[in-house]
Amino acid sequence: MKKIRITLHKDGTQRVEVLGAQGADCVEFTRQLEQRLGKPIGERTIKPEYHAAEQQTERQEEVER
Image (tube, rainbow, N blue to C red; front, side, top):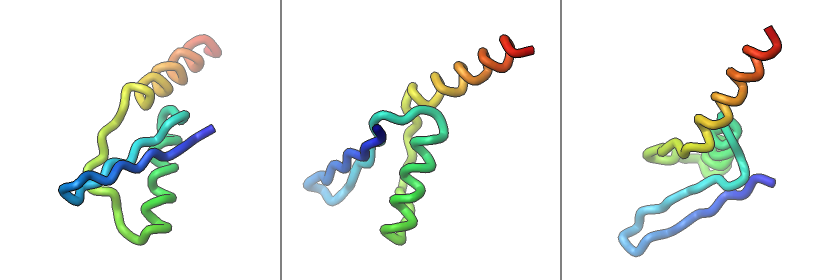
């Protein structure tokens, strides 16, 4: 199950973290949040889970060939 953890810092900055998603799913999940809030998320940091899903997909394609 995908979840979003939002941290509000005392200096006014925020951190939005997606839990339980891999690859482009996390980016799409936050994009939906951005649309609902009406403003883009500032800086996007890609976590290792994003790249792990891409590598898994590449391996599956190689096996299927």
